[in-house]
Length: 268
Image (cartoon, rainbow, N blue to C red; front, side, top):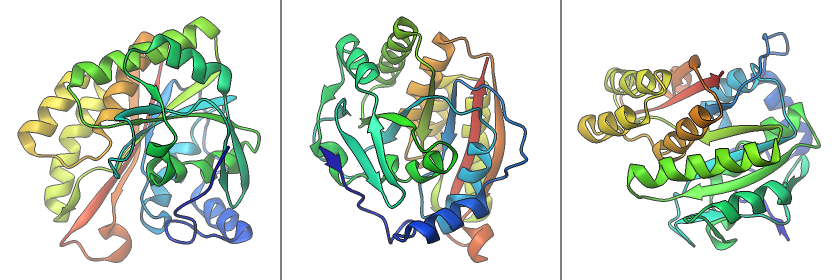
């Protein structure tokens, strides 16, 4: 089956030429590229988060497959859902699912379930795809959505993903799709996001969860990020780097109620 785009014309242009031109304007073709295990990338409308997504995507050596972990904003379908068959469509064409890796992850996991419904109207994975297609048109994905649960569940899912990657020796990058603080002042958003980002840079998923709870940080993709850190450490991660941070206020000039965006790479 083909999962059709649901936010084309809203979060990003529906016209292939306009979309490619917009992505091109956000990426840095001359940026130094490196081997990474994973990254954190935002998923808002491109006018707001595109500069951050473009900056972080420009820094990575592209692999055959990207495992994309997204938060569920809709609440539809299974709470921990994976698709292992078919493709996703964007205005730039279709992105095939890496069925071999997807099935291996599903087989190893005691949490994930095959489910199309959860993915049908969720934007957090879709918004990543045109950036991947810009750099590698034949890229494949494994889409996974995570809903609310204990941190231990996210960490276990991360280890299950890492086990499948190691078992298949797959050439893979893991993306945690996440925006940061939502609808607070610029000062408050930056202060809170700095706390969350520092925990990510320390590769400390438990500290990230503690700060999110105690500081009331409205980072929508904390679950994917915890799973990413857990998987990345299993795959040999030793360091992380903040590539770019900004807020919607840096685009609109309205700093009274902003959304934060961070682009982070994780490497060995």
